[in-house]
Image 1 (cartoon, rainbow, N blue to C red):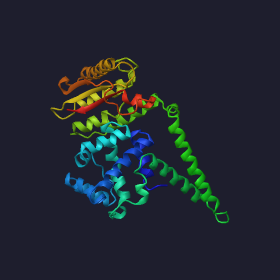
Image 2 (cartoon, rainbow, N blue to C red):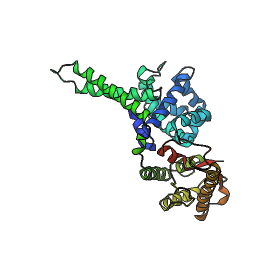
Image 3 (tube, rainbow, N blue to C red):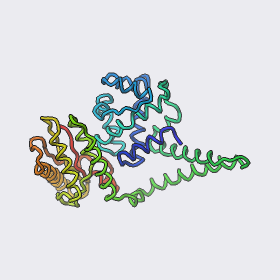
Image 4 (spheres, rainbow, N blue to C red):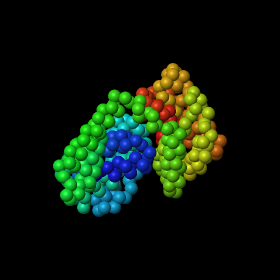
Length: 330
């Protein structure tokens, strides 16, 4: 298996994102590292300048101490994370949180034993090229499987041939998926996506420590999905429990915090109607939170319609992700 495959798996499981989105985040992050003066060393200097040199030391020492999404933004810049998020088809908050989760594990693998390499290894660099990186990962799995199957007394020439056939099969499958994008939609299940999102968001809210920052609250809230019925601004009953927990968290947010409740739709239907609907959905969420005791002065609302997609509107999953409520700190 590839040196970073386990990192991709952990990120995908933690945030419930597809392997392609996790791979895109990793590809963007590695490309950014590769572009820095001094490579990985220059990249780590960004975090030292951001005031978290102690974290860098811990990563190089083998301790995967967590870094906050805010610190990642300070070190890398909002524009960098925006570009990575856009290519991965994720919201800014999800991408920044995923990068924060990934970084300690990534640095440990890039600098084993605390030794910072002058350049990224070929194995690591194979993760930097989008779909090609996905194929490279598949190839690594195929070769690994072939190697582990080798036994004394068996014709060794058979296994390289088997590996070649497996890689060819992966390539054919990838090309087929590109030619028939609707196939991927068959496996998408909106109910499962909502359930998993709610579990992650609930866990994130529960993990907030006393004195948490407004951005940390927003990051947790944005893990949830409120799956409004088509054409409706009625909050589904299955979202009430999470919103009740969110209201409790809001009451412990820092004094003076102002958070925007942004409504977004996919591009189905009339743009003007989508704008109105997104505004109504944002207002519905704001009103519900206020009913649960949240200070109305903490909340503003804005409908964006279909003007800020985070995924392609050409697939069921993409449209599902674009129909969202997104919180942000004002």
